[in-house]
Image 1 (cartoon, rainbow, N blue to C red):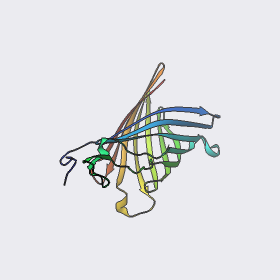
Image 2 (image 1 turned 90 degrees about the vertical axis):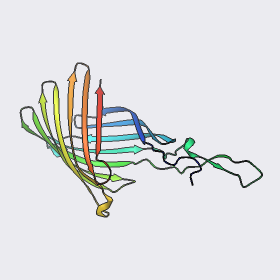
Image 3 (image 1 turned 180 degrees about the vertical axis):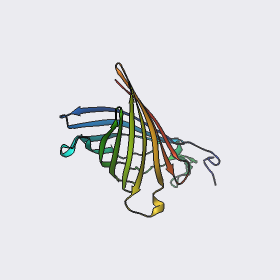
Image 4 (image 1 turned 135 degrees about the horizontal axis):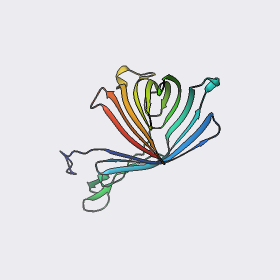
Length: 224
Protein backbone atom coordinates (compact mmCIF):
# COMPACT_ATOMS: atom_id res chain seq x y z
CA UNK A 1 0.00 0.00 0.00
CA UNK A 2 1.59 3.25 -1.15
CA UNK A 3 -1.10 5.96 -1.24
CA UNK A 4 1.41 8.82 -1.41
CA UNK A 5 3.39 7.35 -4.32
CA UNK A 6 6.68 7.37 -2.41
CA UNK A 7 7.57 3.74 -3.08
CA UNK A 8 10.92 3.20 -4.77
CA UNK A 9 12.17 6.73 -4.09
CA UNK A 10 15.57 7.49 -2.61
CA UNK A 11 16.68 10.55 -0.66
CA UNK A 12 19.82 11.95 0.93
CA UNK A 13 19.64 13.67 4.34
CA UNK A 14 21.29 17.10 4.51
CA UNK A 15 22.65 18.85 7.62
CA UNK A 16 23.74 22.50 7.63
CA UNK A 17 25.17 24.46 10.58
CA UNK A 18 26.12 28.16 10.47
CA UNK A 19 27.36 30.01 13.55
CA UNK A 20 28.84 33.20 14.95
CA UNK A 21 31.50 32.93 17.68
CA UNK A 22 32.94 35.32 20.26
CA UNK A 23 35.78 34.73 22.73
CA UNK A 24 37.30 36.73 25.57
CA UNK A 25 40.40 36.31 27.74
CA UNK A 26 39.88 36.96 31.46
CA UNK A 27 43.60 36.62 32.20
CA UNK A 28 46.69 34.93 30.79
CA UNK A 29 45.39 31.63 32.22
CA UNK A 30 41.62 31.72 31.64
CA UNK A 31 39.41 32.45 28.66
CA UNK A 32 35.88 31.71 27.51
CA UNK A 33 33.89 31.67 24.32
CA UNK A 34 30.38 31.26 22.96
CA UNK A 35 28.85 30.36 19.62
CA UNK A 36 25.30 31.04 18.46
CA UNK A 37 24.39 28.85 15.52
CA UNK A 38 21.52 27.89 13.26
CA UNK A 39 21.06 24.16 12.74
CA UNK A 40 19.07 22.89 9.76
CA UNK A 41 18.23 19.26 8.96
CA UNK A 42 16.44 18.14 5.79
CA UNK A 43 15.29 14.64 4.96
CA UNK A 44 13.18 14.00 1.90
CA UNK A 45 10.35 16.52 1.81
CA UNK A 46 10.53 17.54 5.48
CA UNK A 47 12.86 20.00 7.19
CA UNK A 48 13.54 21.21 10.71
CA UNK A 49 15.67 24.07 12.04
CA UNK A 50 16.61 25.56 15.39
CA UNK A 51 18.93 28.01 17.12
CA UNK A 52 21.49 26.48 19.50
CA UNK A 53 24.28 27.77 21.75
CA UNK A 54 27.77 26.44 22.50
CA UNK A 55 29.67 27.64 25.60
CA UNK A 56 33.21 26.89 26.71
CA UNK A 57 35.82 27.81 29.32
CA UNK A 58 39.57 27.05 29.22
CA UNK A 59 42.17 27.15 31.99
CA UNK A 60 45.90 27.11 31.25
CA UNK A 61 48.87 25.88 33.33
CA UNK A 62 46.74 24.05 35.90
CA UNK A 63 48.50 23.87 39.27
CA UNK A 64 51.36 25.91 37.87
CA UNK A 65 52.35 23.09 35.48
CA UNK A 66 53.32 24.60 32.13
CA UNK A 67 51.54 22.90 29.24
CA UNK A 68 48.79 21.34 31.38
CA UNK A 69 45.42 22.80 30.33
CA UNK A 70 41.79 22.01 31.15
CA UNK A 71 38.52 22.89 29.46
CA UNK A 72 34.77 22.55 29.89
CA UNK A 73 32.36 22.84 26.95
CA UNK A 74 28.58 22.68 26.55
CA UNK A 75 27.31 22.17 23.00
CA UNK A 76 23.97 22.27 21.20
CA UNK A 77 21.85 23.72 23.98
CA UNK A 78 18.59 25.05 22.60
CA UNK A 79 14.84 24.44 22.15
CA UNK A 80 13.33 21.27 20.75
CA UNK A 81 12.92 20.93 16.99
CA UNK A 82 9.94 19.70 14.93
CA UNK A 83 9.92 18.80 11.25
CA UNK A 84 7.60 20.49 8.77
CA UNK A 85 7.04 20.33 5.03
CA UNK A 86 4.97 18.70 2.32
CA UNK A 87 6.26 15.28 3.32
CA UNK A 88 3.84 15.41 6.27
CA UNK A 89 0.76 15.72 4.04
CA UNK A 90 -1.48 12.65 3.77
CA UNK A 91 -4.62 12.04 1.70
CA UNK A 92 -7.55 10.99 3.85
CA UNK A 93 -11.33 11.17 4.12
CA UNK A 94 -12.79 12.97 7.10
CA UNK A 95 -14.86 10.88 9.49
CA UNK A 96 -17.09 13.90 10.13
CA UNK A 97 -19.51 15.11 7.48
CA UNK A 98 -19.56 14.36 3.79
CA UNK A 99 -16.24 15.69 2.62
CA UNK A 100 -14.26 14.54 -0.36
CA UNK A 101 -10.82 13.05 0.13
CA UNK A 102 -8.29 15.79 0.82
CA UNK A 103 -4.82 16.41 2.21
CA UNK A 104 -4.25 16.62 5.96
CA UNK A 105 -1.02 17.63 7.67
CA UNK A 106 0.37 15.29 10.31
CA UNK A 107 1.41 16.84 13.62
CA UNK A 108 5.03 15.71 14.15
CA UNK A 109 6.53 15.12 17.56
CA UNK A 110 9.34 17.48 18.54
CA UNK A 111 12.79 16.18 19.41
CA UNK A 112 15.81 17.35 21.38
CA UNK A 113 19.08 18.43 19.86
CA UNK A 114 21.98 16.10 20.75
CA UNK A 115 23.44 18.27 23.51
CA UNK A 116 26.84 17.43 24.98
CA UNK A 117 28.87 18.39 28.05
CA UNK A 118 32.63 17.74 27.75
CA UNK A 119 35.34 17.95 30.42
CA UNK A 120 38.88 17.42 29.22
CA UNK A 121 42.56 18.05 29.81
CA UNK A 122 45.64 18.26 27.58
CA UNK A 123 49.38 18.25 28.10
CA UNK A 124 51.81 19.82 25.62
CA UNK A 125 55.47 18.91 25.40
CA UNK A 126 58.28 19.92 23.06
CA UNK A 127 59.97 17.38 20.78
CA UNK A 128 62.65 19.75 19.60
CA UNK A 129 62.80 22.88 17.50
CA UNK A 130 59.50 23.43 15.69
CA UNK A 131 57.94 20.14 16.82
CA UNK A 132 55.55 19.30 19.63
CA UNK A 133 53.36 16.53 21.04
CA UNK A 134 49.96 16.99 22.67
CA UNK A 135 48.20 14.23 24.62
CA UNK A 136 44.61 14.58 25.75
CA UNK A 137 41.76 12.89 27.55
CA UNK A 138 38.10 13.82 27.99
CA UNK A 139 34.81 12.66 29.46
CA UNK A 140 31.75 13.28 27.28
CA UNK A 141 28.20 13.33 28.69
CA UNK A 142 25.56 12.90 25.95
CA UNK A 143 21.83 13.39 26.44
CA UNK A 144 20.88 11.06 23.55
CA UNK A 145 23.77 8.58 23.46
CA UNK A 146 26.15 6.62 25.66
CA UNK A 147 28.61 8.60 27.76
CA UNK A 148 32.19 8.12 26.60
CA UNK A 149 35.85 8.62 27.45
CA UNK A 150 38.23 9.90 24.76
CA UNK A 151 42.01 9.67 24.54
CA UNK A 152 44.22 10.94 21.75
CA UNK A 153 47.44 12.59 20.70
CA UNK A 154 48.61 15.11 18.13
CA UNK A 155 52.06 15.73 16.72
CA UNK A 156 52.80 19.13 15.18
CA UNK A 157 55.55 20.62 13.04
CA UNK A 158 56.05 24.30 12.27
CA UNK A 159 57.52 25.35 8.93
CA UNK A 160 57.84 29.14 8.58
CA UNK A 161 54.24 30.47 8.37
CA UNK A 162 52.63 27.02 8.18
CA UNK A 163 51.93 24.33 10.77
CA UNK A 164 51.27 20.66 10.00
CA UNK A 165 49.40 18.30 12.33
CA UNK A 166 48.90 14.54 12.55
CA UNK A 167 46.30 13.10 14.94
CA UNK A 168 45.03 9.78 16.28
CA UNK A 169 42.64 8.70 19.01
CA UNK A 170 40.16 6.25 20.51
CA UNK A 171 36.79 6.58 22.22
CA UNK A 172 35.32 4.16 24.79
CA UNK A 173 31.72 3.88 26.00
CA UNK A 174 31.32 3.95 29.79
CA UNK A 175 28.46 1.41 29.90
CA UNK A 176 26.04 -0.56 27.76
CA UNK A 177 26.44 -3.63 25.57
CA UNK A 178 29.46 -3.81 23.30
CA UNK A 179 27.30 -3.68 20.16
CA UNK A 180 25.64 -0.44 21.30
CA UNK A 181 28.81 1.54 20.54
CA UNK A 182 29.76 1.23 16.89
CA UNK A 183 32.71 3.64 16.56
CA UNK A 184 36.40 2.73 16.40
CA UNK A 185 39.75 4.53 16.05
CA UNK A 186 40.11 8.01 14.56
CA UNK A 187 42.93 9.53 12.53
CA UNK A 188 43.37 12.90 10.87
CA UNK A 189 45.62 15.69 9.74
CA UNK A 190 45.57 19.48 9.67
CA UNK A 191 47.20 22.46 7.98
CA UNK A 192 47.34 25.93 9.49
CA UNK A 193 48.71 28.82 7.40
CA UNK A 194 49.07 32.34 8.76
CA UNK A 195 49.35 35.27 6.37
CA UNK A 196 48.98 39.01 6.86
CA UNK A 197 45.48 39.61 8.22
CA UNK A 198 44.19 36.07 7.70
CA UNK A 199 44.48 32.66 9.33
CA UNK A 200 43.69 29.63 7.15
CA UNK A 201 42.94 26.23 8.77
CA UNK A 202 42.20 22.98 6.92
CA UNK A 203 41.31 19.82 8.85
CA UNK A 204 40.44 16.27 7.81
CA UNK A 205 39.29 13.51 10.19
CA UNK A 206 38.39 9.85 9.60
CA UNK A 207 36.56 7.53 12.02
CA UNK A 208 35.88 3.83 11.59
CA UNK A 209 32.26 2.69 11.98
CA UNK A 210 31.03 -0.88 12.35
CA UNK A 211 27.98 -0.40 10.12
CA UNK A 212 27.57 1.48 6.83
CA UNK A 213 30.47 3.62 5.60
CA UNK A 214 33.24 5.03 7.75
CA UNK A 215 32.92 8.71 8.69
CA UNK A 216 34.98 11.43 6.99
CA UNK A 217 34.88 15.09 8.00
CA UNK A 218 36.57 17.93 6.08
CA UNK A 219 36.50 21.44 7.58
CA UNK A 220 37.82 24.81 6.46
CA UNK A 221 38.18 27.81 8.79
CA UNK A 222 39.16 31.39 8.04
CA UNK A 223 40.17 33.83 10.77
CA UNK A 224 40.51 37.59 10.39
